[in-house]
Image (cartoon, rainbow, N blue to C red; front, side, top):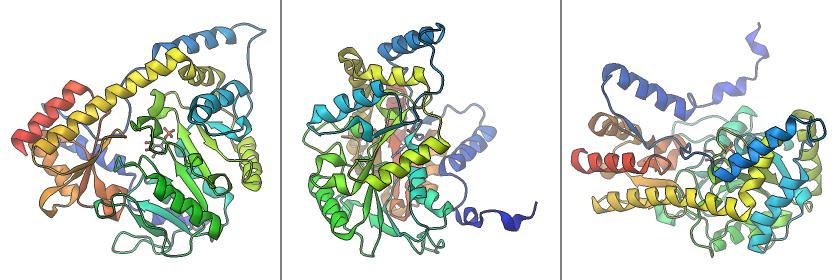
Length: 402
Ligand code: PLP
């Protein structure tokens, strides 16, 4: 095949996907040290099994599929009404946010949704992304040819970076350059920090004044422990005319392998609402019935309690990471309203060098901060998704050996 026909923007992507690079490094280490007892505090995947209410709902839905009268074939691309309504009740009405079930688009993942949404915009719109942040926002726009080229300092020439650092208390300033799409992520992956109501209001006002659109990723909202902190962009006055929200059952209910998420496009954004509907109807087949019944089950009173208990378990692990590292004299952020702990690497060591040192001295794996953007250099991400007791062993090793 003639390679000049391919999308050459893919060549602008910086290296391989962060987690493949890490997996490769671990495999290499294991090759040399087959006896190694590696503790993984790196990857952002859940480890607790599905809650009993979800399993019960799945079994019931499977049984329905075995009976002619209750069998389901193709479902609505936007999601079944029972799930869209349960989401509205459980996530929005419960927080006094008005929401129309027709504004909820159920999908099989927030990764796909945050990556696909840029298709609705022209190729010359300019984007702003937090730095550091979940890499999919940037990479999907690189693939679409919207970012310019990668500079020596790690920035793409046409992207506006919203620095989220300890210096600004992880509350980024408004974009300095004209931008049309603004990605925000709260609680943020990787820093584990939450955007305040004031910060969100500032961005919403800015977007409404300039005609920009906010793409708000709330994949970790259920980890927020303080009820006064904003869980949804739609708690902010004015957001319905300038924001789209992405939510996922992956980290809320351990659905990383099951696959279910949703995107909220307020009907006030009527053009985008219609376009996303058209896109999903053309390119997406909907989430399977069994999974949607499983997702619905987390909103029953028992399901909600079981879901909260699992999250509390992860937050207990987050707390011990924070406590132990702080007691050992390190500076850490996050971990209070998110399953991520953002660890400041002492003495200006580079984050990939620190990765290698932590693996070699403690056989503990984390994620180098630079993989999430230039402002992530000098930091390291640990996650609270691992086993509590194993995490404590990892922390002991860090205290004794690092
Ligand atoms: N958004 C953020 C910020 C994430 O960290 C992740 C997964 O790690 C996702 C979205 C993807 O979620 P999903 O599993 O629904 O694709």
